[in-house]
Image 1 (cartoon, helix red, strand yellow):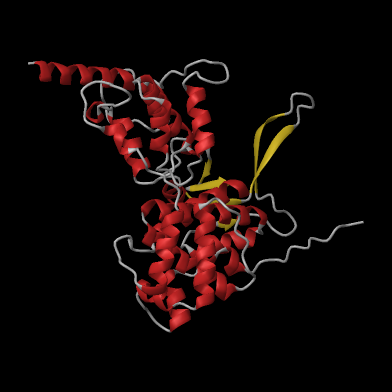
Image 2: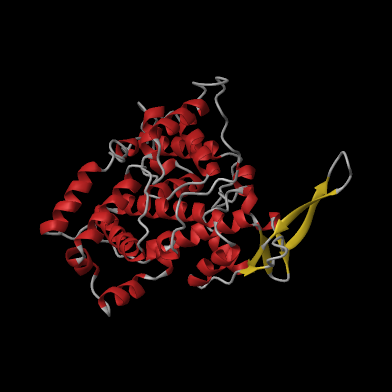
Length: 374
């Protein structure tokens, strides 16, 4: 007997509230533009309460179950965006990151037509190449079955201009699978499968949301909203406690302290990114953790640095850093990527004339010590 899915189908704007821009939302609700502080202070109680649930779910990694009302969810989404901004940079990125990841899951389960509609709402040119009779689109032979010698075909249902693709993957370029050389390109277009398009749109969603709200972290809210912001702030995990201690000025590694001026440009670039509350890619995390381990920083301080990331998970991060340090698993301490590897992964940002970032650190440290002792 066929089982019927009891979960109701969610309306489009419940799943993707951001396809209505912030200004369009204000016009729809208020008939014109109003300030974001006005929205917070005069929003309907139902909308504000739902927004608090939405923000709290994001900050505490809880599952958010939306209502079926487009007006409620659209309002809660944008009020939540404003509340997250009022709480500070880490909270805003955490909220945006959570919303974008949820949208990715929705996109994977949605029709190709809906995916194109979401893309078009961002002004992204995306074409679905299939049809109701054949959703495969562009068929690409990626190899041959060793047993039957038959071709192995991969379906690429979508295509987008190369320029659009490069914009979308700007934060993913350290992952080889996203590099242009590893894509199927024809006639100025990148051909992609549904999973890859959904991931690409996840990045565009983050860009749009982060640019759609101003910084409200220094705004002093009074009354009801002030109470809400204060209460949420008390619930925020202590993400940054002790992090700045990692960068006390010193000219040698002492009890885990490091010399920031001696970091090679590639490592400085990664650290600047995470301290801006950006999520790092797998290879960036690996390179940063292994580098710090090899210059003598202890595990707890490395974990503290990763607290800046919106997707920080203390238990998982500590386990992974301990594994890289040779304290778990095979007990093998991992080696730092050499400069050729850093270049191939797109993490090299300057020509330092060394073979390994650790050599750069050692040379600068020796130079600084000579200057001090002169």
